[in-house]
Length: 203
Length: 176
Image 1 (tube, rainbow over the protein chains, first blue to last red):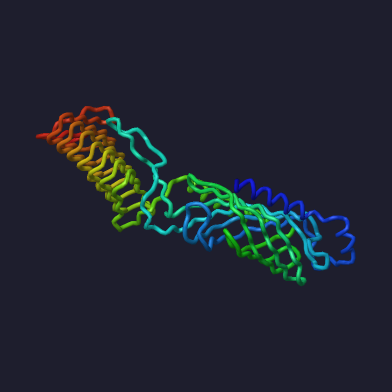
Image 2 (cartoon, each protein chain N blue to C red):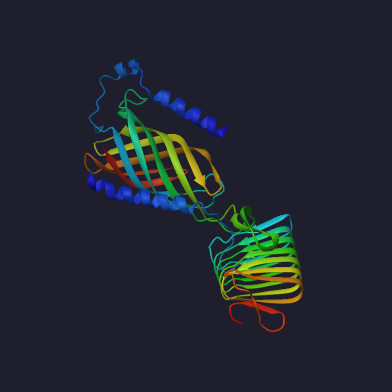
């Protein structure tokens, strides 16, 4: 149910992202001077999970990932602002430290042993250290503030996968980038479930 | 765009490696600290640090411990208790209905006051069955099995050789 709602929400956001002709005319005077002329943003980054992740993991985590964002409109939702829209997707791998203390687990794999015994060979314990794979799918709403600075808001969803568990969770990020030149920027975002810092290539 | 390929490639390799590792289960016990689980129906213990966990399980219906190397597992007063351990492990399974185990090299496994004890151990292991109805041991390499007060002491050398008798109540794979 949660997955269906999240997908519907993202779909609605994507529909909203398509600028209407009226909006385009209304902002015909607006300048794109501060927007770099790019169609795809490629962003390798380091990832931090600052709070408990969705699912059985706990505590903070860290890792690396890659994000790609495809520009879908150079006009955003605000006619008088220099804003634009992109669809972002990617892959983030994190290791969460776990909290220990919760020793009770579930046997998730068995093998036949001697004398008819069935030996548990793998235990899944909530609260233990755990690896996660996140697949974000977001709407990136950019604000081109100055020639070098820009910010963005990213509502969307994250698919997550960890041992014997998986699901979908809402995601929200607030970030910014500082352009070193026309192509390369430093980029960061804070949010949930992950925060990132990395290098952006506007291509 | 050649300068892009190296960092992107490294990130993809790292992500793939972590994804593969994530297929393993995780556990809540910590190295060097006693990790106890008791009462209730099921008690299954992992080892979050991989190696060196000290796991205790008792007074449950089912109990299982999974650990890497150099671990200790004590299990008593259960219906079924199993152990999956790497090398250099010490296991004490007593006063249970059945004990089962996969244990690596140099395993020290003690089984007492149990109806059925089924153990597969690695080279240079020692298994002791005391007051057991059925003690079945499979040895991957040289091992010694001592059976005291055992109705059926069945030792199999998985290299195909027959176990040899080494004095009173002791069978061995390889030399005595």
